[in-house]
Image (cartoon, rainbow, N blue to C red; front, side, top):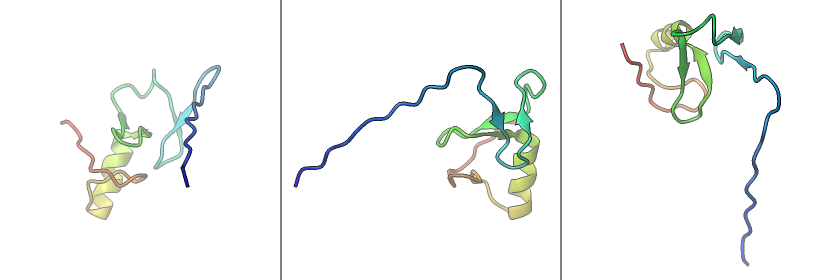
Length: 74
């Protein structure tokens, strides 16, 4: 039996709005510049200070969404 694959593409029109994965607050590019981390695997965004607190409280260095090893530049 042959398998068939379909590639799906999503396009968003208008202004895209992100919410922090950890605190659920809006991520505002103008207000939060320098305080945003985007996972290199799942591409989800979160506030950097929230991510650091979350990782410290769980003694981990993995993305809360996908579990990919997080590397934060100092």
